[in-house]
Amino acid sequence: MIRTVIIEDEKPASRKLERMLSNFTDIEVVAKIESVEEGVGWFTENEHPQLIFSDIVLGDGLSFDIFEKIPTKGFIIYTTAFDQYTLKAFKLNSIDYLLKPILEEDLSGAVEKFKSFIPADNTTGSQDIKQLIKKEKSTLSRVLVKIGYNLKIVQTEEISCFFSENKIVYLQTQERTYPSDFTLDELEDILEDKKFFRVNRQFIVNSDFIKNIHTSPYYKVDLTFQPEDEITVSRDRVKDFKDWLVS
Image 1 (cartoon, rainbow, N blue to C red):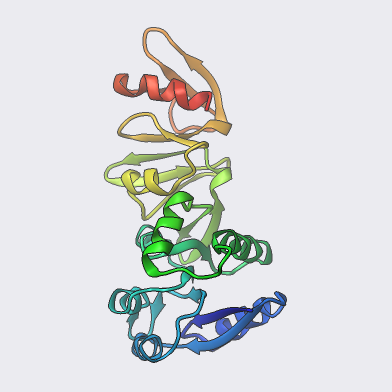
Image 2: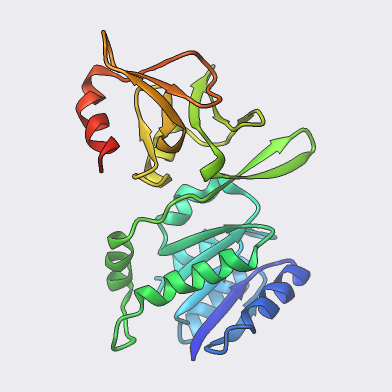
């Protein structure tokens, strides 16, 4: 059985996740933790589980505080409604990052990803985990955007590009342009390399939405529903851009 811990300060959300995990016959939830203080105590006194589902924002702090105080000996799947913590989550033994509300198919995909990391002898140390995770880069699949007082989940596959304007990074979909909480540097680290490429200091483009590429006098890209007529590829990025197109 896969020993699993849930860290979540909202009881309804904790119960719902436990019910969803009950559909996996090989997963056993051994503890449910509601605060940073409780988490530090539990991980100090108990054998670490193989898998941890953890919300990020808890009543007395961030769950990151737990794992920064106690060496993490399990794989972490973060579950939260706040995507501004994505980059840090990926640096703390995280193999996936699920935005609430959690979908069954996303949870199944995260569990399968976890299972792909389990060694044959079923034993890993903290350093081993970090090396295993480095072999497969976690990527951002959904972005949470704010529209007035409402939140909307946007799948990255629906985004033609990310661009910066007046120190704010926006994402472009067929529907409209949305502001995000990321920087372009952060997005470069967490977007899927085969799909997204940073063509210059201002734009990251999605290959699925490239309509035309003009090679004279400069490399310029036309995208579907893009925010401006053409996007110029920086001269120092042209070779990498051409390699990316055929990778």
